[in-house]
Image 1 (cartoon, rainbow, N blue to C red):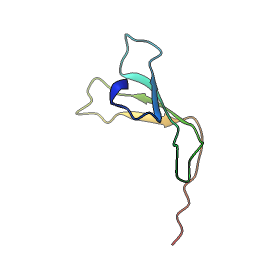
Image 2: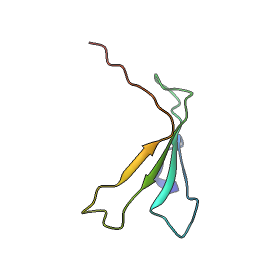
Image 3: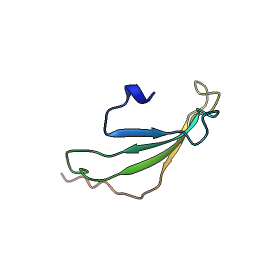
Image 4: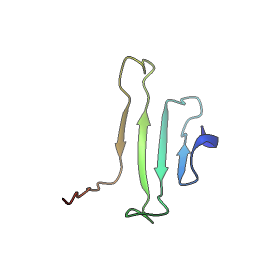
Length: 67
């Protein structure tokens, strides 16, 4: 999986025997979020095609949309 990610993304497996649980860190190099680091924990259930995966972020951030 790591070979397919852009260089701004890192994946970390705490337990290499449980590949369905991992942390994903995204660090944009440009744009509004440049310089930030956003870490998500992802849990992909064994019934993936039937049950939706869950993820949550460790930081709270808000997106403001101006019209």
